[in-house]
Amino acid sequence: MSRSRPEPGDWSTPAELAELQRSQLPRILAQALRSPFYAARYEGVAPPRTADDFAGIAPTTKQDLRDQYPFGMLAVEREQLATYHESSGTAGEPTASYYTEEDWTDLAERYARKWVGIEPSDTFLVRTPYGLVITGHLAQAAGRLRGATVVPGDARSLATPLSRMVRVLKTLDVTLTWCNPTEITMLAAAAKAAGLRPEKDFPALRAMFTAAEPLTEVRRRRLSEIWGGIPVVEEYGSTETGTIAGQCPEGRMHLWADRAIFEVYDPETGVLSDSGRGQMVVTPLYRDAMPLLRYNLADEVEVSTDACPCGWLLPTVTVLGRAGAEHTVGSAVVTQQRLEELVFSLPAEYEVMFWRAMAHSDVLRLEFEAPDAVREQAAKELGAALERELGVPHRITGLPLGTLVPTEALTARRDILKARYLFAEGEDWDKAVMYF
Image (cartoon, rainbow, N blue to C red; front, side):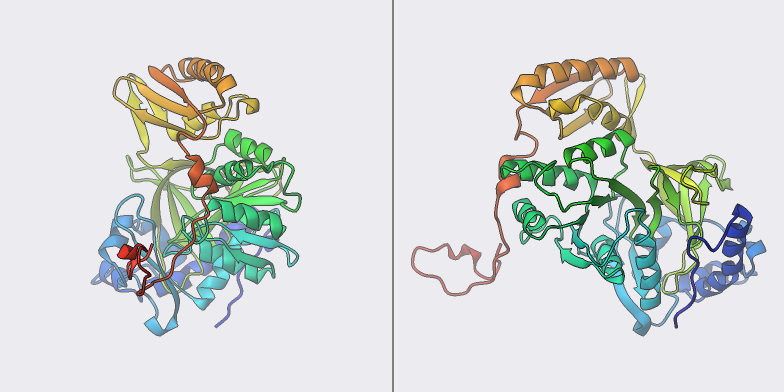
């Protein structure tokens, strides 16, 4: 049954936004109690039913979801489900997620809240997985909702190698893409390997949507430069929640606080607050199949309720990475985000696109690709930046182009094969049945 959901413009003050959240809480609390997990959690005690009860709710953890695999969080009949998904499992065992058709309308609407809008005239290349994770399906649903032509490019698939995606970008006059930041870089490298100029030879392309990796502002600017200055528009979300934040024209990410309640959890004190630094906690307000009460995403974030020049009356969030994803080298603390800032602060003419680092207890090893003519200078400048900004013992190695990302990965034209059972003499019949 369709229900009304708020949209930007339905509130004009933070107090009105808070009242929107508060008015929806009793319904989602009642829905949550229909799931085996929450019913058991509150068995024998008074369950939360009103907005005033919300402050006493304990966070739901990723381990809770793993323990309830697959349907312990289900709050509707199985017949009402539209899709079933699982997380990528980057932080441990995957978790299950499921959505009704009504849930999917909310998901698609939130994804489509881009300051660079999705239009019927757009050709939208979805270059993220269509596997059990939600990401590819989410973009496709939003593109269809807005009337765009969706090209299901998938990712890491034998059927859609990078060389094929470059051809699709060019020949279909793709206007929008959806992929992670690394894939944006890989597509640019594949375009160069094909003799094309990413900054000039894709004139139809008007924006690239991205997520799935914490993205520093310096890297986002570099990705935009590589593709001729078009906007690189970031969002933040998960398979368990869908999109929960999107980037405004000022470059800041805003939490969709009209569709969910967001809190920051301090693991040392156990305190939850509406702003500050800590772990991201989410309570979706329009989720029937799998209600989540104070779900801890375990992502390290910083949330602010200060006004943004864009005028969106929504809190802002900076995603700092997965909680605990930092390493001590000597006396210095090193994070991927800080290293990324330094690497992509090198001059653009050095053409540094790919790098990797390993944190030992006594030294940081960092390797990067660069053209022969600038490799030595780039290593010297990067070493100076590491010393100046982090004071970390380091060993830097500049590598020839094609070392970290082989040219074969950029130019191969692999395609998915079909099963064969009959072979001619001399053919490789080891590929029978188990084709690859």
